[in-house]
Length: 90
Image (cartoon, rainbow, N blue to C red; front, side):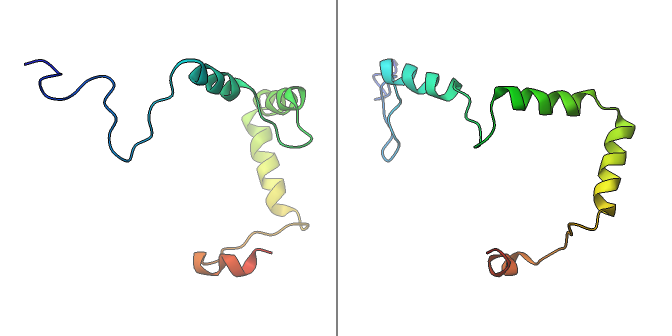
């Protein structure tokens, strides 16, 4: 039996499912997805510098930085039950 005997072919679209993107629109979408999207104030150079900073430091330096962050008195961290989070976010 062939696929067409079973009513199945490469172009079959399932009900309720979007059709596949083909041809030029697929290429345009793929190209758009390849373009980097940076947050405001960021660019490729800034990303490169941040990556370099974190990749070049030793494990000891990373641990020291993490420990120093917990000792800082300018910020705090606390646990909030998930149900209460919407009331905590302004």
